[in-house]
Length: 418
Image (cartoon, rainbow, N blue to C red; front, side, top):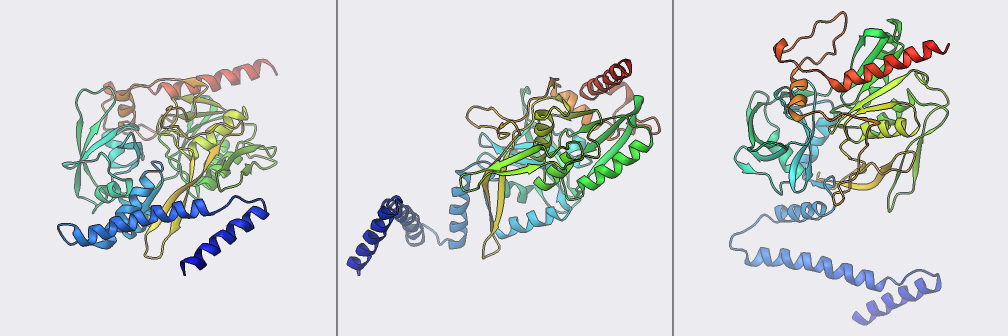
């Protein structure tokens, strides 16, 4: 039998040589040896470990370890975690309202979601969650963390947060709520400047923005601010459709490419509903993924001015592959590139990545926290701000103010050159 197998392998190698393909024996042998190592470890654990073990738990642990060695966004999801992920995509779930990833071995907040417990308490992008209750989180996977953070609405969970610039960690006691994924908020500012804040890229984002834009247009909007601060991203198709609202002429929006994934280009349409509307985009360290696609495209195509601070740098494409037992593999298969060829994804070694605004405004961490605690609404003529923050303690939104100044100056300049 061994002789027949050996002849078969040599035959495959010979055929590969005839057709100019690399011999396969070395790769096959190496793969077999590596898989055999895993099987041997499993066998030793089953036979010799001091206590009896759940074999499925060991296999799940091995699968989690394999994906953890790849990047912070690839992960193995046990059936319950996979179910939780599908629940979230349906629009609401019980939790705190934060998006998290792993950076430098620690759970890190990508962004808090507006109108959620975490947002109202002032948790910020970049905060490191060093403890959940009394458990240290170093090395904890995202899926395990999500399981611990979510729970029955009305129950509390304690988070210990390490924030850059703080000497000591902060402890937050947060009450879980049903988290509803929102879409768009709008207001008309002085000078006919429209304001649209998009909190996440979901299936309805394009339609919601288009509807809100039309309403603002009917009220006299002549320029627009699109606020993508603390927007963690979402659907690629939604990012492309949102960009199409502002970019026309069939221009390139973004392309994806991976080792096993051929380049795929995403283009604008011939016409854009707001293709000629003066536009400013607001971003910060909590703007990630789809937010960076929109921002990078409109910056590269010189369609908008970008104001704020450097974005998160999450520019990779994950495919969710369901497995037979209800578990799933979330695997990074490609990266996003802006029209000029910039990779959005932050390199963990060089720390380079993300989108750098045209006008960089560094906002202190405490100011960001206060801005989150202030009214969710921008000051509109017909709306009084509602906030738990006292008027004397309120802080200015310098990023928004600068964008307003720029658009007003552009309007004046155009008026002078008519």
